[in-house]
Length: 163
Length: 395
Image 1: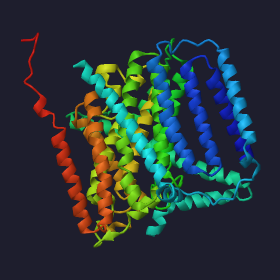
Image 2: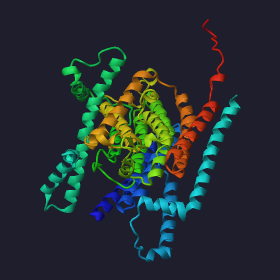
Image 3: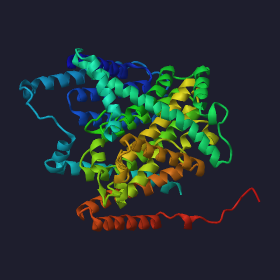
Image 4: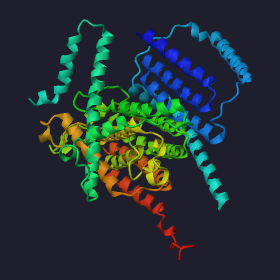
C-alpha cells in the first residue's frame, strides 16, 4: 500500500519537476513547480509527519509559489512568450546534481539505519519548539521581523520621493 | 432517545460499514472516507442551493422588492432553474486564453473550498476527517486558493481578469494574517490545533446558563469580530468585493468564464463562505454545543447548523446594507487596524489566562483591548486630514 503510494507520488513529483524545468512558458513552469511542492507534502503525509506536510503546503504552495508567479509577472514583460532552450542551464544542473550526489554518498550518517522515533504529534512539536529550540525560534522571528520592516521601509521611501 | 437522535448519522454509517466485512482493510477505509465525502457534498450542495435562493429573497426584502417567486412555491425551485440554465449555456473559452490553466482554475478553486470543509466538527463525533492539525490544514488548504485565483486571472488572458486576480490575491494575502492570528489565542488557550479539542474545551456551563464559549470572553469577542471581517474579505463578499466589482472590472478573474465553469466559481465562493463561517462557529461560538444547558436535548448538529445559518444571514445582511469599499481603504484597514488588533487579542488572551480565567482575568483582558482600541483609533484617525472638497472643472 505505502510502496504503491510512494511510487505514484514519486512519479508525480518527477513529472512535475521535469515539467517545471522544461516547459517553454515560464508561468506554466512555476505552476508545475507548485504541483511538485504538493507532491513533497504528500511524501511527508505518507511518512506520518502531518505537521511538516501541512507547513509544506502552507509555506511553499500558499506563499512561495504565489511569490514566484508574481515575480515572473511583475518583472518580465514577455512572460507569455516561450523561452529558448538553454544548454548552459543543463550543464549547471548536471554539475549541481553531481555535486549533491557526491556529497550525499560521502555522508557517513546515511549508512546508519534510521532510529526508531515515537510518532510526532503537533503538541510534542509545540513543546519542543518552546523549550529546546526556543532560541532558534526567536532568532527566526527576529529575522522575519527585520525583513518585514525592511519591506515597509522600501515602500515608504518610494512614497517620500514622490511628494 | 436524545442520544439516539444526536448520533443517528454516526450510527447509520456504522451500520453501513459491516456490509463490507471480508473486504480488505483499504477497501473499508476507502468506503468510510467516501461515505463522509458524499455526506459532506450532499449537505453542502443542498445548503448552497438553499442559500442562493434565500440570499436573493432576503436581499429582495431589504431592497423592497419580491426576489425570485416564479419557480415553485415562494421561488424555492429557483436553484434548479439556475442549475439547468448554467448547464445548457455555451462554454466559451477565449481564443488567446491559456486553455489548460483556464480549464484547471475553477476545478482547483472548488477543490480547495471543499477540502477546507472536511475538518470542521459538525456535531458530536461528526468530524468528517479528524486530523491532529485540523486548523493548520484549514489554512494550508485555504492558502492555495490564491494560486487558483491567479490561474483564473492569468489563464483568461484578459486585462480585467488579471486586474481582478491581482486585487483578489492582494486582499487575500493581507487578510490572511489577521485571520490566522485571531485563531492563535484560541489555539493557545486550548493548547491544541485540532478542531475537536477546541470544541470540547468550550463545553460546560457556568451557573447552568452561561456557556463557556470563547466569544463570551473579551478577547474572544474581539477576535471573533476580527475573524468574521477577515472572513468576509477572504470570501470576496460585499463590502470587500473589489476583485469582482462589476462597475469597475466586469467580474474580475471570472470575466472570461461562462456556463458551468462560472457556476463552479460561484459555488466555490459559497463553499468558502460556509467553511470560514463553520470555522468561526467552531473557534468562538462553541461548535455544536447548545447555548443553554437546558437545551442540550436538541441534537448537536442542529445547533451547529443553526449557528452557521445565523452567521450566513449576517453575511447576506451586510451585503444588503453596506456599499463597496475602495481597494486602498481595504488595504489600510488590514495593515493599520486589523493586524494590531489581532495581536492585541493574543496579548489579551494571555492576560486572561494568567489572571486565572475568572472575573479578574475577564476585566483585565477587556482593559487591554479597550486601551489598545482607543489608542489605535486616535492614531489612525484620518478625519482631520480632509480639507473641504474643491472642484477644478465643475463649478
